[in-house]
Image (cartoon, rainbow, N blue to C red; front, side, top):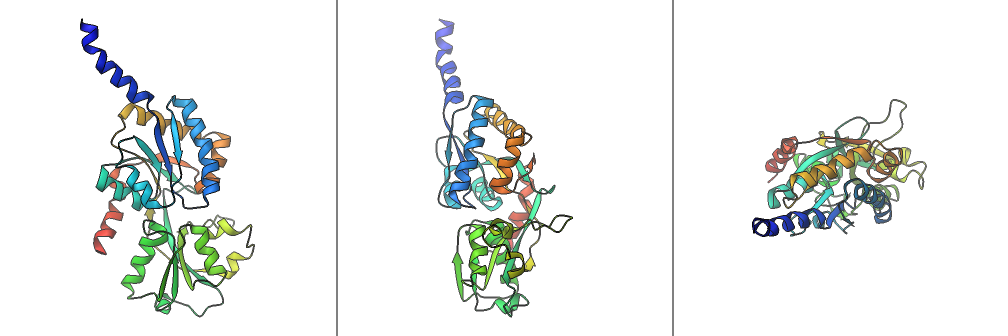
Length: 282
């Protein structure tokens, strides 16, 4: 009799562990690259944890945020601004943040053609400016905030969705300026910003597309879990993700995916500086 009384509870616990969970990856570069490398992550995490995972690469940043409002448990490697939004709307919680080039922060930048007459922000008045997505921190929010503070009004705004597409638009002369992610060059002078994403197609991109300004530091992309996750299952997944970043294949996958070297522990307060910026421009 006592076992029967506890049977529903035991079954509920089993189902919460065996339920398939959704794994979202931000579509900040081509979908093909994200899906290919995301597939390697998915397979590794499933093998390490026994959790069945459904990989999802949506068409935009907003879809990643809204996933956290669904009943099915989900986790994501997402943009910083998207996390702040998902936390506010759906109580999503960060567990890790990415490390790039030894840093847990990065920046945004505004780039222009080297052949243009654009020398400072005020020269962008009335110009065509390319952004990634309105929920991109480095590709929209921080650069846009800089332009607003400088009283600059674009003549046209283009949303290219991906950082590499922004660089292409500026390189090809289809936009006067563009906003994308920035990380400092290596000690050898090798670029680590969004221009590096298109060097295979445009070997001279570093000379033809130059940086006008960079933004204040931004906390790196977080690894986020929905409130539907129990703490133990979430711990298994983010611990396995850290292990993946130490594996030879895993290292290359993460570099190819988001230029990520690994992960470090994170807390919600890491993103308070971003919330402060959001409050200042409302």
